[in-house]
Length: 203
Image (cartoon, rainbow, N blue to C red; front, side, top):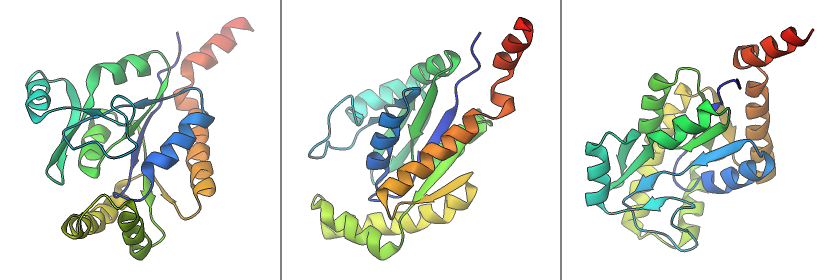
């Protein structure tokens, strides 16, 4: 029987580069599954339904909410985001590692449901850099950018609640830091009890 997989929370303010970091981390670790959240927000250029998010209507989201189909959900910038329950538990029980890219509200709920999860917060090198990245998207108007910056300040205050903090100044280093954190956590004795028992039985 395999040991249960590792549940990893990845959070950070809008524009910090979570998606890019996550793409590289996922490509470097074959035992990682990225949980795909549902959202009611509009799809951005370059995004794909079923890859970045499942883009759904508010009506559909609320119906799933009533069916208790989410591990957590949160409203951010007027849009709903939720983590589906069944696929996450299924992958963990099969010994697969799962990454949840979620907001700080959802992360708080997940930590209560899965006390042994590992939480990582991605920080920008500065607020000025974060603002430049948001403007560089060319997908938000000025009001939206200012709203995202206000939310980012509040989110970054809550980075103190996380197990690890990684600063995304140099992408290669940030990816390496996240990969190293996951690798170290995978080798913890508490996460390998069944594997240890199997080895002992063969001796």
